Picture 1 (cartoon, helix red, strand yellow):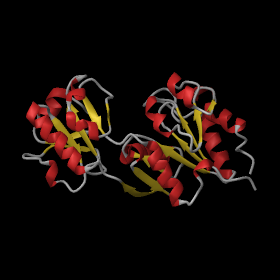
Picture 2: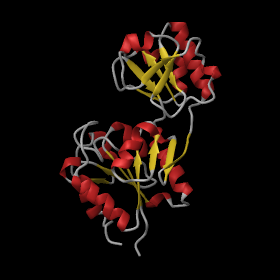
Picture 3: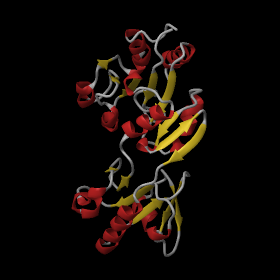
Picture 4: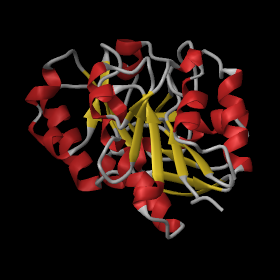
Length: 259
């Protein structure tokens, strides 16, 4: 019997073609089915919050997922846990934002609700990505866990925040930036450790800059044909684009379909 491999797939641009509201190519569905039939382990690896990524996991009939930028682990369809951000560091960031008059919000659980101290966050962003719940007197010190934080400002104001240097963050939209985990490799290691598997048996698939953290020497990395040049430069293998049977073709090259 061939060695069991552990495959981790990003969502947008890797499993999903055509953007966030796109589709899963039939060849991708076929590849995942054949991988499982051959005895391999398949998992999503995404920066999305677990509750946001779970519908994609069900859509693909997958049971495993690294979520929350590496801080969340779902195995066999069950959420094992999500590591929160360092609370003291988030408190320091919020205090600095308050001193500078910057509007902020927090995600304190695995849901589509963001806590905000007043109406300003929505009024300034009109953001529908996550619902805003106003909590008068909101204080990060009072929260047991903090999974994400959000700060409203225009680029490059974030580079002036000294407390942000101790936290992972990224910007997806012009109105505000996210403070959230960005190390997918950490979650993959946790998943591999759970199964007592060798890191060298992992294979990761990605296309964007947010996948750079999991393109490391510990395992095999595959960049989609539609991937950014920086990711292709780090990949062990560059396959065809997501809408050109990219995952299926990579599995053929890696000889993964035979049991």
